[in-house]
Length: 196
Image 1 (cartoon, rainbow, N blue to C red):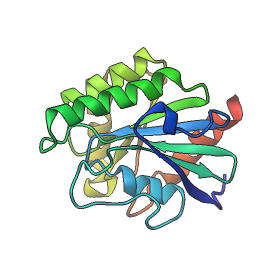
Image 2: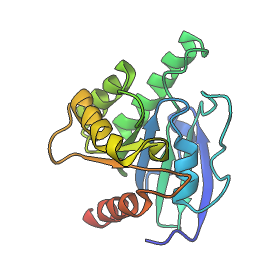
Image 3: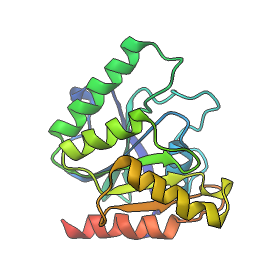
């Protein structure tokens, strides 16, 4: 797949603001500061389609990007940022749950974790939540350029074990900076879009 066109078509905090549920969607979820905006920009070959911020917790909405007029990439709010009030983070949970529970075109939620760290309790909770809604299967381990090749196998194994992944579930190490893992993730997205 070659992404030639990517447009932000909706910024939503509630269902009434979602675009019409008439296209396939692949959503991305991850902790604040995990590199989600950088990854989305890499996928669509644009420097700043998704706003990359120095201060984590900036994505407080569900952002819908229409890709090649064919499907959508959905950027879910980052979770787990300590400086955001509890009421705001609870609001994000409700917002994400409403999206997961009622979106017919949603094919998969790709969860992002930082390859350098053991997944947090919130990462595990998010993965359990995604499994509950039937969206387990692909984890992207970001910031792969920050560790050595030798460390990578150990880190991926740690992610698999901590999240309780099944043998068929995939962990794809990615570096937005060096484009490592980009082709593999695009292949997975291609496969998802063709399956349905």
